[in-house]
Length: 277
Image (cartoon, rainbow, N blue to C red; front, side, top):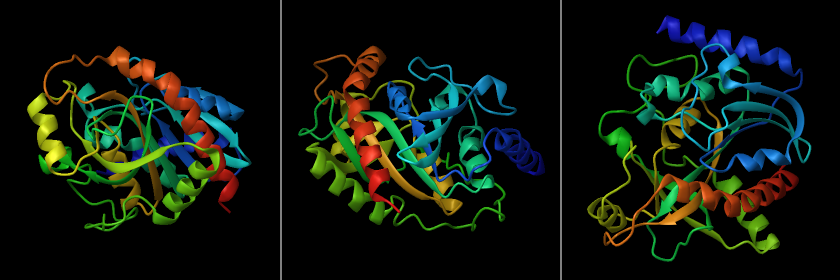
């Protein structure tokens, strides 16, 4: 565990000199959503492969670079793409970027993902505000907090009853209403992937109240909350869930939907930053 802490410290020390100002928000962009980074007034761009210890994604639609800059006057660290458990990384590796943000004193996190719409009222191109999640990965024994607790970051048993910040959610809903964006709200379920869900999987998820399903995000949110970060999350609905087996889901479909979703997310995030102190 001391090696992991040393890695966190080493990576944070490498990134910190790129920008002397305090960073207020970390933002993680999911599959096909990298275009949100176009909103940034650039300070520095760093490829993941150049950052010591940083996990590098092998998935199409994840640019694999860190962008430091400003959006609506807020200092941000934007991650264009993430790594996933299904790529063979450990949960500690997947969530290392969150630990580095915490070591750098970044207090807030925005997570985004591309997700399948399980709710029958959701359609490709919709944006869903995550109000809660169902941690299927964690239920099967892959919680990112398993192992020795990092006491310097947070408690052994962190509360997850308000994983997604209520004040942030209220502001986002106000912004979406003002912008005329039909913002959905719902519960996100995180599975390990990389295979897409069977119709039976999806019918089960819908029966227990899931609105959207994907293969990421939840480990990052758990680690963020463990370290005391305030979190807001968005799912871009990239495809309609195949509850009866009549259609085929592809990653290319997911990426195409990002062209519609990314501008909506950019506008919501810009409006949110204008509203927040």
